[in-house]
Length: 421
Image (cartoon, rainbow, N blue to C red; front, top):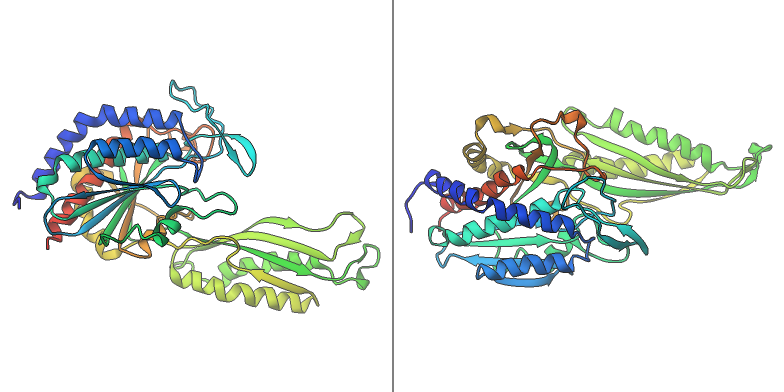
């Protein structure tokens, strides 16, 4: 077993990352030009599998529909480290004028739609392919195993289908061999190239969609006293539920968001309808806030409905639910020196959590994990002018990927060094 310190390994990783950077960029451009939607990433999976097989890895395909998993066995005892990249695109029409822009089409909910890597999953794939190449080349310096997880359907499986990290976990992707720790990262269009953003605890929110169906009594709009009005009941419910966050949650510690995204009911101006439907989402960043929302929502819905003489049914969660993307405190503390050594102290930035969601959380529910943001914004672009994720103008610089390759590789090596068996 090599006794070289991790910093010596980091020098080797840097040199190899420099050497393969042009290949990583080429992979990214190919993937960006050929995006595929969730659970339909057939060509993407084939492209990934062919690269992993060329490295001599044991490769499994069609995991959780279209996922790819490969194992690197050092032949020496040690921990099992998993590295994850998501691989699906979005139904977005790209507006960027790039030689490698996407003009791909796909089917989404029965409709023909444009497809674009509008969230950077193309870069995630390329970075993990690069890390795999370096780790295979450094196999003799490793102890333990590395499991490379290329996950489909992070953006959500099509209606009526399962997919994503949740299905991968169900199918045993973290078993045989059993994973000790998992690392993942996401490119950021708002953070400067060369930076890595980190924090312990909740980094991205749990997401819990809900539906409320309010039933009253229909009447003519001229005679509201003959009705049990589900519209005024809905109005009171919408406003009162917001007070769960503003008056019941300890916002200093337990941030939460409740958003109503749809209100459906009624057909004419002079008819009080019998039924109104509300649909929304809850976002929470720790278990205490999430548990409180699950207690308070039915209490509010029932109480307000009773006060208005209406009936109400709450479905929570509605059709899916993601846990909190939660960075294990001990693992984050263990890996922080690696982040600083890899990016530089000034470029390892402690960040605030975000209320977006990530199904990487399903892996973290099973094993300790760390999820990071890697900068992809060109240095000459003002953050306020940078296009947001999931938009037609979304853009991240190729230069941001080398740090991602180095981080994935160095975290794997350093974790193995610190957990030798």
